[in-house]
Length: 501
Image 1 (cartoon, helix red, strand yellow):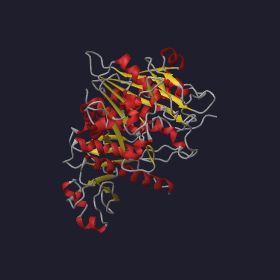
Image 2: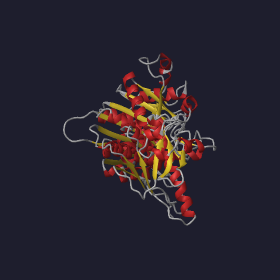
Image 3: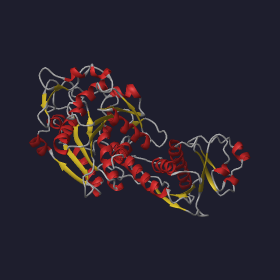
Image 4: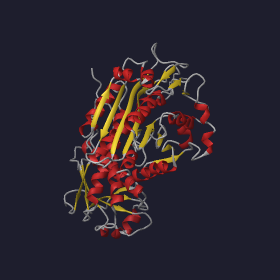
């Protein structure tokens, strides 16, 4: 019997822009921290007296949500902190969570639940803050649960009340970015008894394939083309590997070409270098980088960005069996370069090496970016809310960091190469093998040595390696993030592509 999973992509609240509030629809307003006069933030501020705010000890911090005064047209009051863009995202997520909780209470008590909310925007708010609010409103109630129970009713529509027509384009764009994050979460959250390489490839066709070109290659094509890394990693599983290529090509003149490479390991046992049992269940999310690439290409196409973008996802299961690859094996990648295998649990770099070499040979990109849950070392270095950036040049690193700021995702640059930091160059020679061109797990800091290995397959192109081992999954919710897969990096990749448009 087929295992039931929630419908993909997850339905998120619709967000509309209107100039007129409806009397019968619950209303929410926003209030800043620091004792700012509510009247300066909302046309209905006169209903939120300072006396009332003091009585409920409302601070206005980002994420604080309180029911409005009894008898007032204001149903909810949400804090936006100091008004920084990220605070608006936090406020939006908290507001959706509060409304969903009220809907669940009303439904359980047999009362009619209001599934539409209108949020009155302050006249001074700009498109950037509104975009962050929309992101939070759409993602704050995200839910992925495999259960026999019917999904609880949630907020269906959120109307933003404003007379500023300039925010409409920001709202539309933010809605697409939020949906990209949700799709990346969906793909990574799906359990691996459902999600194998063929399933992930089919989902790329079903989602991104609606607005972009998607081509799926099977294990026979991989063998013919010499994708030795993908075949080696996938060789231990009865469910064969796949290679997915997604393309967004605006017609007309030549555009800058950005190629995104994602790790698509649909489950990782570690192979013969088997992982500890504790925490192995989380390896269903080991394809979060591939999920981010699929979601980003779809979003780029939906936004109609004036840039050529290609996504490559090497999909495989890393299993332990009699046909699994071994430490000591020598694997020949696409293009002929060879790798000495020293740890079968370092499988991500093996499948990505093939894709990177393919990108260099076939696609000639202006920018090459790979994204992966690659090393536990990055979780130790940066924690679980910040991604690591390794870049070939200062300019590329800055582009990624700025894209992260625009996306509301945190990144930190790590050392790589003599043009950036001599710290990394002391480990460069360790990548080379005595019996092959390179060795898979050279000694040295884990995150840096992995980046050094991948660099060998980038053909000296402008390149960035994004290690998302920490922020790709969360143990508990924060801001617009919920426990489970986070969808981290999807929005950053879209913003990075947009910077080339």
